[in-house]
Amino acid sequence: MSQKKKEKIKLDQMMKIMFKLSKKVTVNLLNALFDEDYDYKKVNISYGNSEFLLDNLKKIQADMFITVQSEKRSVNYHIEFQTQNDKAMAIRMFRYGFEKALELVCNQEGEEIILDFPKQLVIYLEENQNIKDVIVLKIRKPDGSIERYEFPAMKYWEYTQEDLIDKKMYALLPFQVFNMRKSIESISNSNRTHQEKAQLINIEFKKLIKVIESVGKSSTELYEKEEINASDFERILLVLKNMSDYIYKKYGEYRQMEKEVEAMLTSLYNPTIAKENRKIGKEIGKEIGKKEKALEIAKEA
Image 1 (tube, helix red, strand yellow):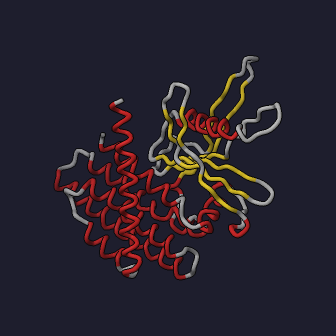
Image 2 (cartoon, rainbow, N blue to C red):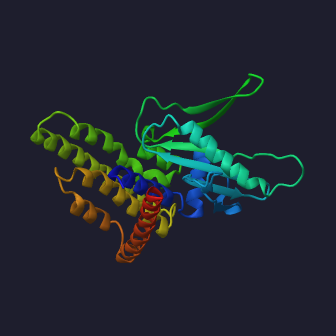
């Protein structure tokens, strides 16, 4: 398996962890992303199947389906996580939405079939000026008329840490460190000398450490204010560390930051949380390992 694919798997897993925090945090996140006004005390949430078997026996895997159940209605949400722009995203989103709607048809009564598509959103992590606010797929019907299938895109890089806290999108805080990746990679891929690259990347790493420290302190404040619970706090710090690992280990020939970041984050939680953190880390490692193994088997088939 290529290193690029392994990195994508790990990023996907980190995103999925952040969408499985406490109900309060998750509902507040959905409210912000989809402009809803749910009261987390009055709804239930559940996570739906995201793997679909096609007629040719091939499988496709979406990222995240969440159902919010209130007294009056049940609404399905579909979220995809992207690091870079993908021209085929509109087709993929339509396909995922169609497969989920088809899955839900089984629960319908009556003669007419209604394909109930979920509310959909793509979260783009990395800055790209070609990404629009709304992604559109046009469908030409037999009579020649055109139907528009569209869904919104969240441009994550446009949100500051303060924006995320203000909108109660706490689960997305750890990904602030990802905003540094593009500038570091640009330096690494430049025609500068090794010494010049090292100097410039070390400057970026110093900025990265400040971002990690700021997000860590903000998370601590949210925990102390009971905006997030202990389990949320643990996972936010864990993903924050993994996201920083993802960036600096890739450019480790220039600087080893691991001990510095480890010490900083460890200072933010007590030994009990640290112990639980290691347990969660092992669970994530197993999950990523299963995913990688499944892809290897599929490749050999």
